[in-house]
Length: 321
Image (cartoon, helix red, strand yellow):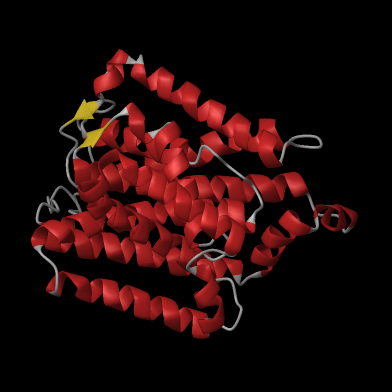
């Protein structure tokens, strides 16, 4: 209960933020919210499911590309609905995760550092593939991706202004967060966390570790795909950089700094890191990454629960949500 109250306070403060910051920073915060949604997806997969995916950005990029090609009419010129694009982004990322997970987790399965290396390699392969897929823009990506359109039955309601866009994105992120929290509080959530820490016991009790791992992997991919789809409507642009090494590494750092075993901490870790980056770049230039790496190492060694999760544990009564 205390943890849910903390999350409600966080989202309430975020809702009040535009009243105290400029229009420019409202736009930046909107993008940070989408990155926070990506961090939630990795926290679910890594912190709760025990699957160290070093290529979470590939699902983000898949969602972004599917949203772009559908809303630009590249598949069906007469069908460019944002709702269809969002659904396709989530479904496409989830199906890819199911196919990939069936290969990775079958039999005794792959885990730990080996899994991290393989998922990173797959992300790099996908990035190279998209770089050379000229029908999808190749290295330059796809430009002029339409903004999110909430209109129904032919009516158009495009989110062009930053303020309404911010609140719609905030509402989506909050809804996904609380939906995942509710799911983790069910019997399935208990099994999800048990497959991470006691897979042999689950197998002895008759549960399928493969099905559980596949389900959490696909669910995390669907959330990441949704984040990617929302991101391209904000940026109006999708490119291979959204699917490869750099973003996969960054989201891993966000989640580790925030706290991989707490959704709220992972979400806030993404927001805090992206905001810090914005002014550290101006002061230190490219050397800001060294500072980020230093914070990452300190967090892992001295605060293994996470830089933000440690105080949040105390506020939430030691609960991880």
